[in-house]
Image (cartoon, rainbow, N blue to C red; front, top):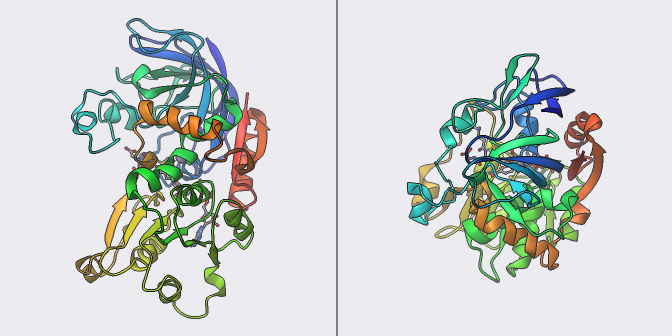
Length: 369
Ligand code: NAD
Ligand code: AHE
Ligand code: ZN
């Protein structure tokens, strides 16, 4: 079949909207009509050539929601008409990682996913006879896409696609970093670096679990109002701090925070986040994705004296099990999504979503088909 898609033909070039060829689902796969997709900073990072796994040409996008329109042979867990969210973190429930109960990082199809291919080692997308790569196993910047059933979460039918799609990455990542990875307890003090599409969800996760101080740090002064909307209690703009930022944050939190979160992807900020943790027990969670070639550093003494450095992918959420629950939390009013969707654009205008993000004018742009 043919489908409209935004194709990244080359790094650092705008996406091009073209009709691509899409092969139907093979065994264990489903065809999904994407109704809406968010644009995450990770898409921008890959598009800008900063992803060491980045492949071109490819169809980016990993924060979608849609409807199953065809199932391949042997599919048992999904049916035509199901409302679904594609998962870049699948859940096969059979691999060593899934069975460990210790991680959400299913390994069943990670090798082919990282090569921009389906589990059988081929792509379903092509354009004028040339292979187009899948992206993060999702490729939601296409009106139709194919995924393995283990990488698809079924969600309730009354959840709007335009907002539920955000649970395919940003909401689940931010809230899950608090509830699954850090397991923040009521009364804890926390610092969130970067108050964008992910950081604001960390803030609402912290509010949900009853954190005490919720300190937001961002270079963009407009983000203060945004943070306060979702439960931030203190705002620090590093540009307004005359001395050392870490010393300022440690003083503000009476010796350092119990938990800190990096949602910037900047490795200097990651170090600040670790060092702003309380001596003896503070935990710092890296969410941000750093540019290819960047490394983190700190004095080992920071860890010897009890600070803990951790990371999280998709907020530690087990794709098929937990994503529908996050959608339920939204539908039940436990968490908010609607105010964070600042812009809605048709696929033809998807490049504007990246401009808005880079100018710091959007929290989340959702593209509809
Ligand atoms: P965003 O562009 O919406 O937000 C980033 C925010 O960080 C902005 O508000 C910006 O002003 C702020 N910022 C940038 N540099 C800063 C600095 N030096 N100090 C303080 N604030 C700074 O991006 P997003 O969609 O929220 O994504 C944030 C990061 O999380 C990205 O690196 C993205 O790739 C990553 N991410 C990771 C996961 C995961 O599973 N680990 C999931 C989604 C996104
Ligand atoms: N491909 C990059 C790493 C990118 C990365 O860390 N991705 C996160 C999700 S970001 C969503 O917006 C993730 O889930 N990582 C786990 C995984 O298995 O990819 C690189 O550095 O090579
Ligand atoms: Zn993302």
